[in-house]
Amino acid sequence: MRKKTVVIGFMGTQLDSGNGSGRWEKWRPTVSLVQHEDVVVDRLELMYTDRHEALAQQLKRDIATVSPETVVNLVAMAIADPWDFGDMYGALYDWARGYRFDTAREEYWAHITTGTHVAQICMFLLVESRRVPGVLLQTSPPKKQARGNAGSVALIDLDLSRYDVLARRFDAEHGDALQFLKSGIATRNPRFNALIEEIERVAVRSRAPILLTGPTGAGKSHLARRMYELKKSRHQVTGEFVEVNCATLHGDGAASTLFGHRKGAFTGAITDRAGLLRTAHQGVLFLDEIGELGLDEQAMLLKAVEEKRFFPVGSDREVASEFQLVAGTNRDLRVDVAQGRFRDDLYARINLWAYTLPGLAQRPEDFEPNIEHLLARSSAETGRAVRFNAEAKAHYLRFAQSARAAWSGNFRDLSASVTRLATLADGGRIGTALVDAEIQRLEWLWDRGPARGAAPDAIDLGTLLGADAAEALDLFDRLQLEAVVRVCRSSRTLSEAGRQLFDKSRLERTVVNDADRLRKYLGRHGLDWEAVVAAD
Image (tube, rainbow, N blue to C red):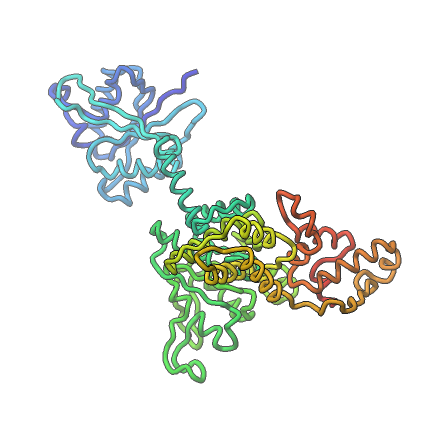
């Protein structure tokens, strides 16, 4: 069954006017709605300012003459000044809020026409915001005025996804934004690509705090800056990108650095200081290692994030700063909250958008594109083209993706390694001999454990599990668990321990998550990472 067509329009006191017979010789936008043979209007909701009642009644009679099947509802509005945007939008908004739209049986066209009438701007906004669930109906006058010439009509759907050309442009812009956040690196890891795709959407649509978690060198600072630059290119921020490592903030200087201070607030405060939060006004504040902040500073930060106002040190007057917070940490803040080192309310506030950046070793398929990117960057900086020969590249990639490679510094380690290879490459070619030397250097840099051949440390499973649970273990399970605990205690992170323990089977998996596999193994014995390493 055909849906009824309902047109919503506002009467124009100039273009729609006319009382004598000559009115039929001119184009009147409201009357023209029903003068098109191929356009059926079942109902017209015609709004008008209440002092123009006579003209509204005349239009109703004229429409009945041309299209008697069209029902005209006259809607009088008490608007003092139709050119006052606030008054007009408020009146139309209130009408739309109270109107009973029936989208199952009716379709709605909001009428706009030539000129810059405030009512038409408001009508556009109501459709764009979906307060009026329909499309725009645009009417235009004929080139030559003549009796019965209804001009032209066109429907405009503000759902831009329905326009193929526009949709392709938006898709291209979306793809450009993803490449921008990834620094143009054609990463192949599905999990990482999906992560960046969501971060892109959040970065351009939200000003809420964002929490980036991941190991040192995983790229938190770099990603935060790219997010800022993306927002700036969209004119969403006008201020600066302000970055600070909270691990470098101590004592009175921590609050002063972040929130500023008044002259004389403490010894050494010889002038007023604005502080980084005010420096980041209308921009982005990146607080790296936010878990290192003291509890007092956390409380002050919570107020600043929620209210956009705070007290500088030593001041009894609040100051304001509108900034977006991006926080970074390599710690599990859930553990810090449970142990009282991090405020629960602040964690809840910054945890709306939380993302964990995987370490380099968790993205084995991304070594090659990252290496190519680093070589290209080196060539651009030095003006000297450098590349691997095929055998050397395969040799380096095998090592990079193996359990022998710790990559404890993540991308910092990889960047330093490629820089060394590019610098030492004679004739711009990296050969196997150079790769062998670099591998030895990396293994030496990562070798911080006990000397080889030393007796393994004794593992007290009774303390970890409890005497009864330890006694109930088979010898096989006991020896396996002791070996796993030993590897955990010699590793810096759960992921690093997992890479060593699953060094062969991980190569056969399409999705590598060594940390999750190890976490589940420990969980079967009632253990977690924190308990294992804390008992060391």
